[in-house]
Amino acid sequence: MDKKKVLITGAAGFLGSHLCDRFVKEGFHVIAMDNLITGDIRNIEHLMNDADFEFINHDVSNYVDIKGDLDYILHFASPASPIDYLKIPIQTLKVGSLGTHNLLGLAKHKGARILIASTSEVYGDPTVHPQPEEYYGNVNPIGPRGVYDEAKRFQEAITMAYHTFHGVETRIVRIFNTYGPRMRLNDGRVLPAFIGQALRGEDLTVFGDGSQTRSFCYVDDLIEGIYRLLFSDYVYPVNIGNPNEITILQFAEEIIKLTGTDQKIIFKPLPKDDPMQRQPKIDRAKEILDWEPKVSREEGLKITYEYFKSLTKEDLYKKEHNNFEAYIKK
Image 1 (cartoon, rainbow, N blue to C red):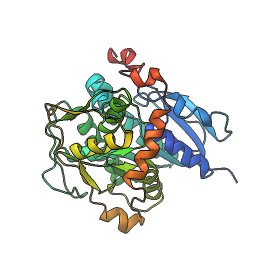
Image 2: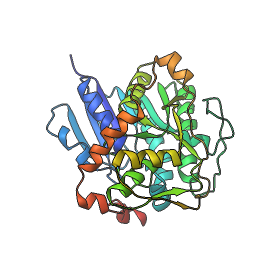
Image 3: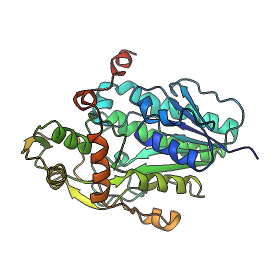
Image 4: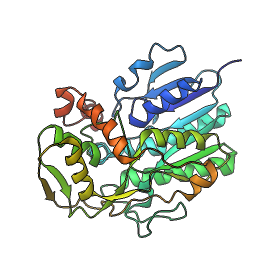
C-alpha cells in the first residue's frame, strides 16, 4: 500500500523540523517545504537521505504545486519572533495571507486535510486570564506586533471560510510559548535570549519589571498535541500549550541557576504591546484530544540548555539570520 503523503511548510524551522521527524517516524512520505528565510537547513539535513523525505526550497506566498496525490498539509511557514516581524513585516503578512490562501487552494484541489499553525498572539495583550479559545482577543492591528497577530487572525478566518464554504477538512492549532532544541539562539524570544546571554557571559535582560508572565511548553509535548489534533474530527481552534505559568523575572532566575552563571539581571523598558500575561486554558485539548503536557520545565530546560551548549561560537554570536538582508527589500 502506498504511504500517506504529507506536505509540511516551514519545514526547516524549529517546529516544522520536529514535525518532519514525527511524520517520518510514523511512516508517512514527507514533502518538506521552506524558503529558508528564517529556517535552517541543518535542522532537517539528517533526513535528506531518507527515501520517504524530500525537500523543496519554495516560498508559499507564491503558487504552490505538488505532483501526485497529497493527503495532509501542515502549514507552519511564518516568521515567528519579534525580531523577524520587525525586520520582515511584509513577508510576515504575505505568508499568513497569500501563503495560507495558496495552501488552502491546494488542499481543496487535492482533497487533503490541512492543519494551520495559529498562535496565542491572536489573543494580543489579553484582558481574560487564562485564555480560552472563546476569547476574541485584544490586538492592536497597527502596532509593531500587528503584522504577525493580524496575519494569524486572518489565517484562522480564511481557514474557516474554506471549511464552511468549500467543505475543506481543516484544523487550527493555537500554539503557546514553546521551547526545545533547534530554536534560533538569537531570534529575540525570551528563552533563547536568556540562555544565549548566559552562555556569552552577558547580564540577562528583563524588559519592564519582569512581572509579565509566560507559560512554556516543551516541543515534544506540543508535537504530540498537533499530531492528535490533525487526526481528530474537531474543526475549531484548539489551544496547545503548558498552563504552568511563571513570571519573566522568575524565569531569568531559573536560567541563572540552570547555567550556573553569576550574571546580574538588568532591566530595560517594556516593548510596545508586549503581552502582560500568557497562560493557555487547555480544557478543550484535554477533552477532545486526551492531551496535556508531560515534560516538566526543569527537565525540558536541561535538554534545551545542552543543545544550545553544543552550538558553534559563530552561532552563539550571530545577531540575525543570514538570509534576512536578501528578503528585506522584496
